[in-house]
Image (cartoon, rainbow, N blue to C red; front, side, top):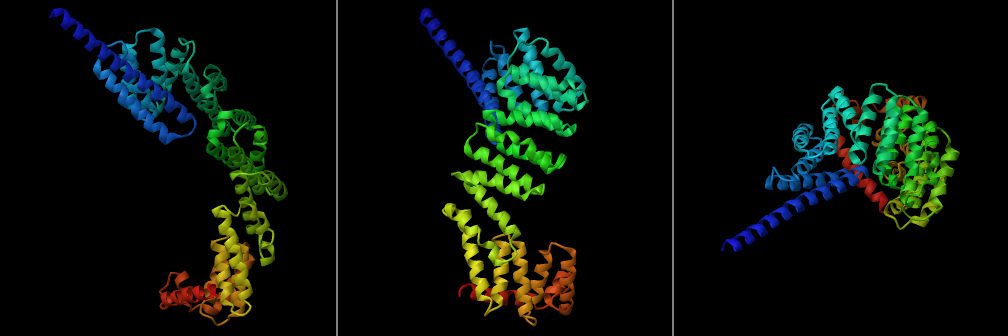
Length: 442
């Protein structure tokens, strides 16, 4: 009986050990995947995995708090809480992990993340001291790379150019950190007003295949560069986008961002040429480029004839909902423009369609003014003039329209615009909506 009992006890212990090991193994796998997703900018998915890490590792730790993998369980909990922004809880777990560490190198790895927790809590002096100690005792791995990233941030925040070396060193140690390091480089380039450092950062990002996963971040950084310096400088910083090995859509988004920056810099011709280099292709990027160019043309349109080039531009992508909506609105505006010759209220309807569905403000302004010119005594003329004022680009034009509005100072629309009581306003709006609906059905 004792022999059988001992055998059962051994099996039970083995099963318990396997369950413990499996819990830690699952937590490690979840943490590694969470790190990958975090670096790819997929924060929500990463958060879910870090929460899984805490659950699996904590379960493993509770099974045997004095066991062989206790320090690893606490280390995983500490790092996961750190990524979740729970600095105090992370610090508590990491301190216990360091105390339980079975090797000096494991302890130094833990200290790196303890330093990150201290930095997150605002204690930069202690964080720098701890990370300096830990970096001297590590030979490689993610902890060494994260330590260099941390030290780089701390040094650069204190105007110490040695921090650039740390940002370079991190991806040499762990290639998975190179996008993170390049983004960090750009942030400090902006902070320190160093265009040359920004150029290095963008060049590296555009050269990393995996950086295509961070296209939203790269677009945001390009726009931040435009705010920090100017749009032309930011466009120049994206010069290497044509050399990327990213997928077609990711590359197209950066090229179109560059086109937007050229437009903001006042170089319409280069903006158009850049966008058309994408529009001439196929797929989602080409469709987005055609829509972008169409919107630029709508922004400049002041007459119905100015819309003529938009339809052929969008017809190749007419199957896409956004393009179909623009094409339908173009048809409606043209039809209403012709109808306005007999029924001027159609020009009011055309103005609203041009403004609300096409974003063609100059064209809409022209229709509102044309309606006001054709219907001097109509009760909706003041509304048309007020709308035209809002869309007028120059102060001289707005002054002229305000002068015309003086003749309607007792209109419910003018009174409502000044914040005064406006009896009859709702009735006018209901009547207008009904009449516009009737005009559009013709």
